[in-house]
Image (cartoon, rainbow over all chains, first blue to last red; front, side, top):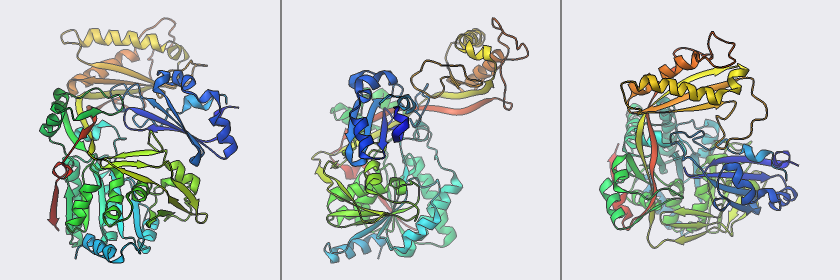
Length: 100
Length: 466
């Protein structure tokens, strides 16, 4: 099953001008557990989707909110010449088709 | 008696028995404050009305240029609405990050508007103004004492970058607002500020525990965004000595334990920690319980006081003048070969505009439909039926940037390529002129933490009677 088939929220946004935070939020504990244990959501698997090194990626499980937070560096700082997404709000799409 | 003096007196007398009600009126003052929810919030007799007005998310242009991101008429409407509400209830109105980026030009424009509103309405109040501009000499002195560290992977700051910045601001924390409240004010307008400090300063000052006060502030600074469905309507927090309750002032928005907990993720790289100038908010032991289907109670946040405060510093420098070209294509041959074709056009343009001038500009492309949005390219599965092409030039002058995009327009339109059938022109222009001079371009060149022993000196307070 792909992430987009069962996640309630798959979003991205800047966390400061040099970081993207990708939040995955789930409808129930079973869906959250399924994603939290998935190999697809490890730094090694996410890093190539964002063109960064695996050790620059952080994955934080947040059970209170039935959520997983992924933090990746922005390769271009928000608003620098060449940036494509100043708010970083449309960088979630590489995650949508991940097989979980 | 000023509104802040009234509240300090009231909570000193109640000795912690009375909960404090705080209205988060708006997370983005100047983009519209929905009236029904704001009025419902006023009916609940809050003890403080707070509004955040800025953010770094909007990019470097506003900090660099000194312009507001919000429209003047909408800014005026919102300021008037919250000012009238606070004066009617005789409670402090606290506004942070004035004018989008919170530097002097933003603060000045916000204050000018506020004074005009007061004059037109015959309103009188005592105004506290907190400045957030960091003098270059102060930052350079901190640099020399190794008191400045990069945030995330920002390069190490040097004096040349400090000197190049158009505006430099520091995010003030609770202590700045507390000085204003202690001085006796009805309204505080602050330059760049931590959004939490707007709401947490008063309760922390009268003895409420800082952890829950800061946690509450972190949530209500976005108004009803922590609810399902999330929205911009005002939110009411009721703070006591163990925790706080949240209730949206829009009946359709529900603050549920999961929606509130999930809000701790928003725009934060760490959902368990929030770094503030005066300390660190620790949310690892936070708990969220439903009171009913619209209200949630939150407890358990802890606060660790920092011995040496560290202030987040932001600066933006000019990088040139920006001009863009806007056009589209539906030709499958052009779309298939666009990468090579655009490179060819770049060379033709360079040879023309650099015939008697240096190559002093940067020309870049976004091909929407192909790779305009994603920061990381993906393998194209099938070519899109149409593509929108934006050429962007950053050059030393407005004239030079315009020259480059106008030349680009003509040679992109008529570029002859192998297999081309459409010899009438390669691009569709939705209107003419399709070239737009956008104005100066900026980038963030300072995003650092500065050690600051004396926060009072860094964020001076002025009092004005209106």
